Length: 405
Image: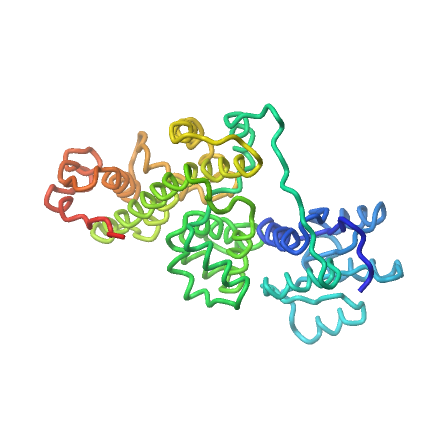
């Protein structure tokens, strides 16, 4: 292995945002002080290399422009000594494609969807000397930046919600011990707003959009495939502040996760009885508090960066002020399908015009989920949405009770 200078520069070239983010998290996990350059086309890679060669290139075969294979060929023509490490990631695993790449001596030829654990180990072997450990200090806040200013600036770049603790634990186990079967993890993923939202977004990205939009987790998993879905989930578990640890934030997180699941389950139950799309209704119910959860994750990040201790009242104020704009910005930036965004919005208000059956169902589910514990839902029969759906007091009184823990 060639000697790597401090703070190695790693160039990632992948046109798919979600794959690039996963690769970014894996590089940071392997070597936290790596300088990352993220590009989306071949010409940008060549321009960057002409100016300053990185210590490692990770390139997608289908990169716009001349493509990953020709880019590898161009890099090898430079005859640098030692050769620049080059990981070629590709969905072309036929014998002819492999034979075409082998004479160019890629450091790794990784089939997509790649094995995240295997790639992480390859990165560690390349970027670290045997036995070497690199400690990276946490960045800190500007001395005068308060929470409200931090949240206002974080809104348009928020990474989303924290992961459910049980989901995060299972993903960390999968990374450290052995590859888990997606079928085993899917029931957990189904309860987690962050994973559900990001997998739907990834399935609808330009690289994956092969037909109608995906609006449910099951549709996203079918399009992405088991290994790629699990890789993306593993990448989420590697992100900073993905778990809530501040004792003031944890009760808020538990309440919001519980309310998300309750709304989703009630929407699913009502849709089954009213001949609506039960999976779309479940998804909208699960995602409707994504903005609130994203605010909690950003507050956790603020605390991790050295922000002052907070009271429950301050957290509640932050949620009231920032949850709605966080949620709107996040759903737009992730490019969730418009129909799904409209269904999520229906949880809060129906607006004017013609109401779809699913919008009325999600709205009713949220109202029922917000009832005080033990209160009968039959009182909601007077609500406009209930009348339009033909829900009587008897049916509403039979809504499933919250699961006991």
